[in-house]
Length: 388
Ligand SMILES: Cc1cc2nc3c(=O)[nH]c(=O)nc-3n(C[C@H](O)[C@H](O)[C@H](O)COP(=O)(O)OP(=O)(O)OC[C@H]3O[C@@H](n4cnc5c(N)ncnc54)[C@H](O)[C@@H]3O)c2cc1C
Image 1 (cartoon, protein in one colour):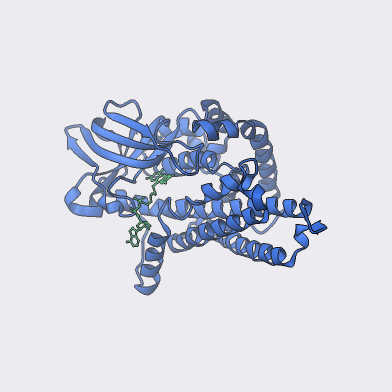
Image 2: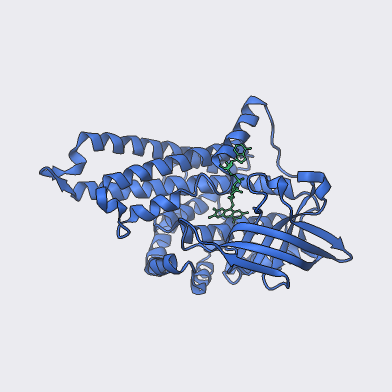
C-alpha cells in the first residue's frame, strides 16, 4: 500500500523488518527484559541487515535512504513491545551516530561510524549529569587541553547503552567560564583508562542498559574532539530536533500498538452476554484514543517529511514530543483499562507498555522544558538557528 509518505519500497522494507524482528528479536525479548542485557549477536544481525545504516552515507557503509525508512524502523521497534530494546537500538543509531556523522572528521568516521553501521561497535551519547539534566549548560564535566591531549574529569548519568557500549560521545566543558558557549563534544573508547560505569535499576525500559559514568583523569588525543571547540551546545540543540521527533514517532507507534491490541481483545472478551466492544462507554473512549493517536501520527509524518527535506524543525519536533508522549501515556493508560484485571498482568502487554511509556515525557527534554522552548519561540519570538 503506498501513501503520501510511504512508497511500495517502503512497505516492502516494513514487511521484511517485521519478519526479521519476529524471527530474530521477539524470541529473546523476555530474557533481555529480565537480565537488562541485550546480547551482542543481535547488534551484528542488525548491522548485517543494514538497519543501522539507513540514514548514513554510503562511503561508510550506509544506505543514505530517506527519513521514512527510519520512521518505519522506529515504528516497528515499538510494536514488539520492549521500549528498552528499541531505545538501545535508536540511542546507538540516532543519538551517538548522529554526532559522529555530523561532527566527526573522516578519520573518526572510519574508526567509529563504519563499525557502528556494521554493528561491530555500539555507541552512547553522554550529556546528562547528576547536577545538569534539564539545565544542559550547568554540566560540570571538564575537558582540559594538555599538549596534544584533553583530560576529562566529571560524571554522567542516565546514559542509554552507558555500560555495554564500545565508545562514548561525551559533552564536556572546555571553557567553563563561558557557560553554554564553552561546551565541546568528544569521542572516546570504552577501555580508555579512567572510565568506569555502573548500571542503574529503573521502572521501565528494563531491557536497556542505563548507566552512570565516571571520568577520572581520562586522557584522550586532541584529535578526538568532534567539530569545533566550544560549539558543543549548538550541536546538541540541533540534533535534539531529530531526537525529539524520534521520541514523538515512538510515542504514536506504541499508542497505535496498544490500540490494535485492545481492539482485538475487546472483540473477544465477553461480559453481560456480548463482546465488550459493544459497550458505548468503551467505544467512545476507544474512538477518542484513536483520534488522538491519529492526530499525532499525521503531525509526526508531516514534520518528518519537512526534516527530510532539510527544514529546521526545532519548534515542530518539540511539539511532536510534547504532545505525542502525553497522548501515548493517556492512550496506554486507557487501553490497560479496557483489559480490566488482565491489563495489570505481566502476561499481557499493557503492563510493560505503561511503565515503558512513562519515560516519554522525561527523557530527551522533559515536557516542562519543551513547553519553555515553545513559549520562548512563540511568545518571545526567539529564533533557534542551526549550528554553522
Ligand atoms: C531511562 C533514561 C534514559 C536516558 N538516556 C539518556 C542518554 O542516553 N543520554 C543522556 O545524555 N541523557 C539521558 N537521559 C537523561 C534525560 O534526558 C534527563 O533525565 C532529562 O533531560 C531530565 O533531566 P533530570 O533527570 O536531571 O531532571 P531535572 O533537570 O532535575 O528536572 C527535575 C524536574 O524539574 C523540572 N524542571 C527543571 N527545570 C525546569 C524549568 N526551567 N522550568 C520548569 N520545570 C523545570 C523538570 O521538568 C523535572 O520535572 C535518560 C534518562 C532516563 C531516565
